[in-house]
Image 1 (cartoon, rainbow, N blue to C red):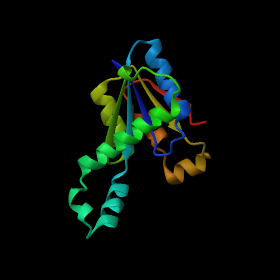
Image 2: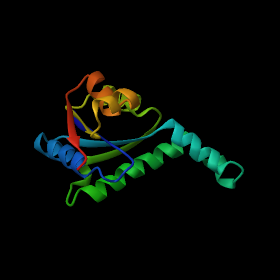
Image 3: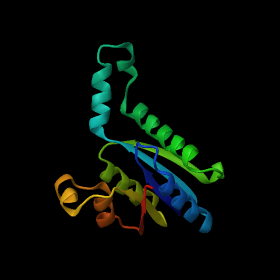
Length: 148
């Protein structure tokens, strides 16, 4: 088993990662840190590189590596001291909700730790919420940590 923590692009994932790492050390589990780059962002990045030499090497697998690097950077920025052997960073490209749920299905973590933005109920209904969708559809226990 492991603890799966999903982090966003903003490097304000401090509390989320601290909660995930605390759970991992408490239960003597590995901490898997996942960052998902939305497919739309990948398409925008690819379009911006169109016609440049870099466009040929810009692939989904390369963008997934970039997502894993964002996860690594979030760990480095968020945790003062940590056992790097306990942490694995992962990156995906696609719909964040779908990718987080798929990773949770594959990993079968003890806990899935996610962060939630504070929004009004109307805001959630209009704009949707990755955290809300994950909470409703995950097949494992979910810990919702505020990003602050």
